[in-house]
Image (cartoon, rainbow, N blue to C red; front, side, top):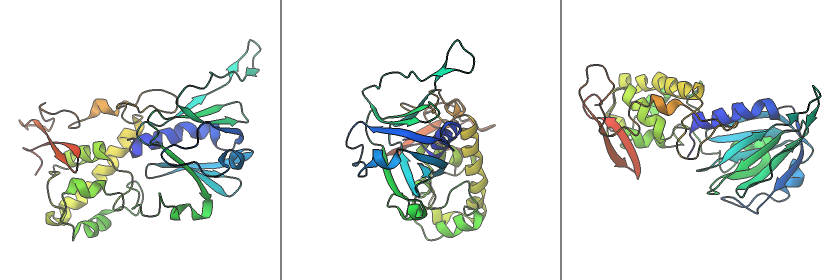
Length: 287
């Protein structure tokens, strides 16, 4: 499933062609994805200006001139693809010829600038819903989310307090979206390696100093991944169809049996399963 950096990369790719533009027409090509689409979704979107695209955790929020917000979740394999008009032989004149919809193109947004945005989702684990913009934070998909790891509310004092009475392994704690929003398996593994903290360590046993050290590390990992366009594992692509490149910088994820990249560490990367998820780490330098 795309994590925070992948979703933020998609949002940034969509913003130049959607923000300030009107959705001329919306085509809903099936009754549901993971859940049914909201009633009258195509009609509620048509003619509405996109005021702003923002992100909350792993969700893209599209604020509309109608006072509603379209909430988009990419699920396991969802992609937002951009088809732009082609320039004719006459400079400045464009023809709005787009490829025919494919099997897994489930939602199509025709923008008034001639751009077509396509939501493609082979596994159909994605989701879309509409709600009042001023009530979006209370939507069932967003209401229980913790602070954003790149926001001011996620700081050393917050994480120390959140860990204080937890007896769970730190890897499981950081994947809890109620504790911190948007983190996923890949980037938690990478952050814990950089902080030299074992994913098996119990949160309440960590010193305040070691807990505090995680905050800047988590931010650095996420920001580097965003700048690299995310990690292209399995189905993920950016909005322009290009691959992300952060997977080439993985220190531990997917590197079972390979040498640890910590300077002077002679350990090898191990793989264990925690809560049904693969965890990659170095037993030698992560304590």
